[in-house]
View 1 (cartoon, rainbow, N blue to C red):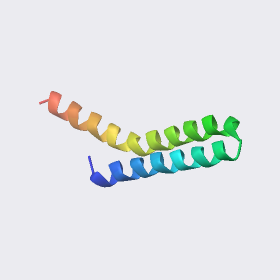
View 2: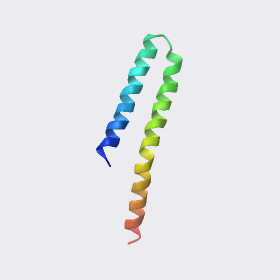
View 3: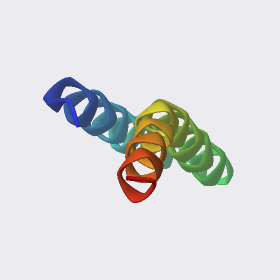
View 4: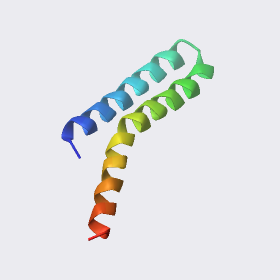
Length: 64
């Protein structure tokens, strides 16, 4: 797994946390759950290609 992917996912997490804090301070608590779910979906979409690559490598090793 590339270290860049870990940094990108961490950046998404930090950004979501900051936006949630700003929304809570502004009194818009109803949007924090939506932002959190959107951040989770973005992180999963970033991780999905690495997961598919891992599956392909494991299937090639098992077929040996």
